[in-house]
Image 1 (cartoon, rainbow, N blue to C red):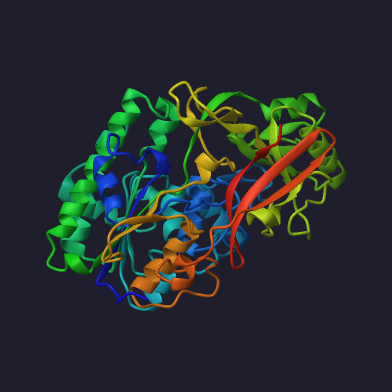
Image 2: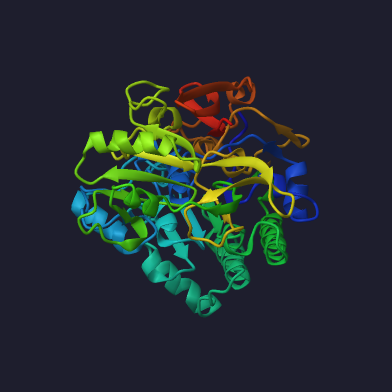
Length: 491
């Protein structure tokens, strides 16, 4: 183990694919990676969605522990009227009120830092839900979380007051998010690193994720904002290097998931309704007597409102007969195979929480190239223009994440490694860097540990199917944790 460091700085680029960190697109980050330890095969969790992944970063664990099983999910313990949207502050407040406790009950990085008298400051430009998930008990922990979305989007609204008083009004929302990027960078470099001086400082850029969705992965605008967040990272490095303790500051650069381009639309909710299963869309914010609820993107959950497992089995078999479907999961006591013949178990992808849905589908995707020559292409249910980026599933290009240790975290010549690693390792690594022990609930491990860095990078492959439907999932195993490598339909 390395000597403990004085401070840890974490920089997260939402949605950034590792294969897009190149000298022409992101010269500063590319150079930083070349002088650091880069975990090239790092992985997100499933579903590879922002609030699910953020919760895994903060808890160091899969959804099977932290319970955020989707960006949106039907949760009758909270409400039977609509599908809970974890991006919304009002839905989070409702959940905590109805549960009489936290939505994310697992111990987090913030909790463990606070218990050891360590400070933690966050500058966030994502949704209220993602801001919440990175340190759910920030106020109780005595920590500081700023959201560029305003006072209603953080549990420490005084942080917004402080920032606005010093830096002026919050920036306008434009696409790409140039103004927000510049604003949060100033706050982080000048206020957090320059004056607050916390033990752990984290900044979350909402780009390039937003532009990937709506401006496409390799458009002119997207390439411009990638250069913009790269320059912002350069300003953060300058702020770190200007400090007298610069050589004792560890730097972790990460993304929460990747993205793939969309090739077309498969409206699963409408198709299910036409097949005799009246479906309420998550976006409708009303169940209204529907038989099932359905979330979307390039994957989603399907819940039986009345718990009818016979209907669940019918829908599972119907899904596996559809050409649009790539993968299907059902809960099971088996670690690999689901309850319904042909499906995988939710346990295989770390989704086996008490809040798990009865049925999970992933739309068909592959490694074919999009119109710009970038690999990774798949169907979506909607939500973004066709051609725009999407994530949530198990395609290698949406679950492969950026994960780089630099600064005082890596004092050797730069190199890349393909050992099993992922976003669940970030919190245990931060704690280890500060000489603190991670809670046993964290399924991840410190990336400083010899047993992690020397772990074999072997891949296991699983298959399931019924009739003409066949699906395959490749994983890397490290102890009890499974890192998905790539999943999809065969043929």
